[in-house]
Amino acid sequence: MISTLMYYLSFPFVRYAIVVGVLIALCSSLLGVTLVLKRYSFIGDGLSHVAFGAMAVASVLKLADINVLILPVTVISAILLLRTGQNTKVKGDAAIAMLSVSSLAIGYLLMNVFATSANVAGDVCTTLFGSTSILTLDMSEVVMCIVLSIVVILTFIVFYNKIFAVTFDENFAKATGTKTDAYNLLIAVLIAIIIVIGMNLVGSLLISALIIFPALSAMRIINNFKGVVIASAIMSVICALVGMIVSILFSTPVGATIVAADLVLYLITVIIGRKN
Amino acid sequence: MSIIKVNNLSVGYEGKAVATGLNFTVDEGDYLCIIGENGAGKSTLMKTLLHLIKPIEGNLEYMDGLMPYEIGYLPQHTLVQKDFPASVEEIVLSGLLSKSGLRPFYTKNEKEIAARAMNKMDITHLKKKCYRNLSGGQKQRVLLARALCATSKLLVLDEPTTGLDPKVTEEFYKLISDLNSEGLTVIMVSHDMPSAIKYSNKILLVNQTQKFFGKTLDYIDSDARKEFDGDLETVKKVERSVNKEND
Image (cartoon, rainbow over the protein chains, first blue to last red):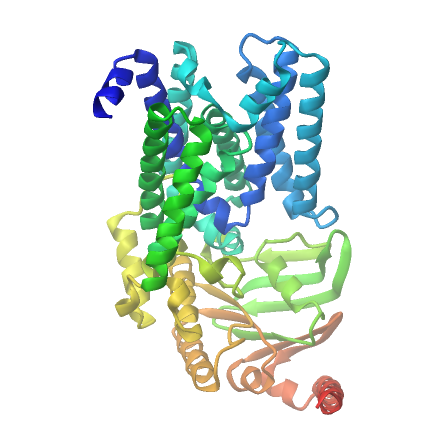
């Protein structure tokens, strides 16, 4: 088995895939804690559907670089969703449900009507669940992924204390003079970026699993914020590595395998958490 | 010397006033209790004082250069905090956030301020403990230590003894009272009438409009109090009869 793995690793595109996968797993886990604690988990889910819709539009328009469209659309939707969260007229969760099913429907509709290839079902499935596409990344996608990941990680480290304060007690932070609106916006933009780069790895339906599972697992067994963030980053990277290796060796779909690994780890932490 | 001056203020949400015609001043060293029935606008007024919502009408002036980041705030517990994995130290340090500006890390000096605040609140031994596992009284001390990191001038508390048992409540009032006698100005929204009268030096009674503002000693003999206590009695009677029916 090791020799098969070594054989695969001798190909540069497999090595790219693993580097990209680890980076995506690392930054998707960072904001998971904030998302879960602020009850924003569904925003991640909603945004990934928006990204799916945007991707469909981009492929119909035959854009050379689809991220030109997906990234801004997702960022703007993230900002709008956060705003409705504070609006009392349309409840946040209803707005998200509305937005996500509409984008899903319109995305599928467009992909079906303006089919760019013979295999529409296959294309849709790939965008939703991710696929072997992680192995067909070209150099420019790898570079974009690395740059965006580094931006996300550095921003998170620089604003770590602010993100903590805004997550724990927004009113206190605001009352004592912190610009909470600006930091909520920052969180939303970071989530949008993470979703767009994460879609390459696991597809749009499974990306929210990549964001929330490591955080939920870490919260089960660790009792301080910094520890939870570090632990969820480590767990996320391990699951991504295990998932990718298993998917290479047994040719399973890469996104689904990673999420399955995350689920197994979560169940293990539930058991450990109970014992303590 | 006055630090807050409120002039014909109306407070509320989205243009709809909850309480109107508020006129009062807060002096340095005051212990002001804001009292009134549920839904009378106390919390809305407090949020306006904290700049969390904008006043609908009238003037709210902070004097003597009191900046927003010099106000300590003890909010009610939120749903988010119930299962929040954070250590006591992390929470207390977050009180210093606005002082650190854009700097990403806390300095040694700031960590010392936090250590002193924890010492004062007698929670140093809980430093590494997780907030969600603390008792109600301990949680309040943690949030109070955080507020003290943010301020040395003005402390605003929102019904701080809700859900605490009588002994812990009494200790908590004592703590606030001590801080007040050290020179910290205190504004407390409260529904605990006996303690409000016992500890405060000024009372503001709000019930859609301002029913009373002045010294606590004057409040005790005022008509406003008789009326308000009468209302409270009626409420209690109704509650009792409802409870009997349920039994």
